[in-house]
Image 1 (tube, rainbow, N blue to C red):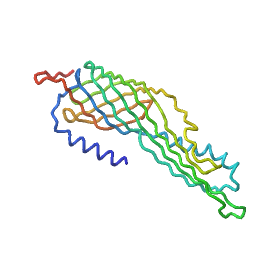
Image 2 (cartoon, rainbow, N blue to C red; image 1 turned 135 degrees about the horizontal axis):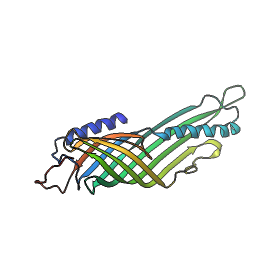
Image 3 (cartoon, rainbow, N blue to C red; image 1 turned 180 degrees about the vertical axis):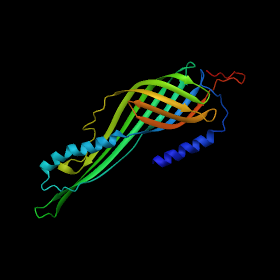
Image 4 (tube, helix red, strand yellow; image 1 turned 180 degrees about the horizontal axis):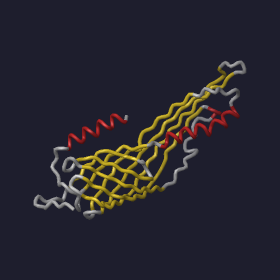
Length: 232
C-alpha cells in the first residue's frame, strides 16, 4: 500500500512538472499537499486492546492456549492539506487526516488432555477521521523553498467495529469509542519546489502524524501575466 502511494506521488509530480506557474508564494496562491505520515499509533492501541482482553478471556475460557494468533495492519495517517494565501506570509486552509487499524486474533480453548475444545475469534476495525481548520505563518518564503509554522483545530471521530463469537456476543461496535469530538494540531513544515509550482511537502507536528511527506502543488488562479515576481 505504501509503495503504491509513493508511485502515485511520483507519477503526479512528473505529470504536473511541466505546468507553468509563478515562482514564489504570494497573496492569492492556493497550495494542495497530499501526504502520507508516520507512525500509526492505532496498531499499538490494537495490541493493548488484545492484552486488556486476555485476563477476561482467561477467567471465562477453560484451559486457554498460550498460542494466540494475531494479525494487525493499518493505513495512514494520510490525508491532504488545502491552503489559501490570504496575505504574502499568512495562509488559511483545511487539513484532512485519516488513519485506520484492523486486528484479528483467535483464541483456542483446550480439553484437559491438551486437545482442541473450541475456537473463538475477535475481529476489530477502527477508522479515525480528523478535519482541522489551519492557519500557517510562512516565515521563509523563497523561490524554491517555503517554511512555515501552523496551528489547527477541528473535528475528531473514531468509528469502531468489534465482532466476536466469544461469550455469545457477536457485535460490540462502539463499546469503547473513547475519542473526544475535538482535535488540535501544532506543526512545523517545509515545501521544496524544484519546479516552479510542483514540489514536495514535509511536516512535523503533534495532533496527527508526527512526520509526513508528499507532493505539493501551488498555483495562483488570480495571477495576471504582467505581475512582477518578488523574492524576499
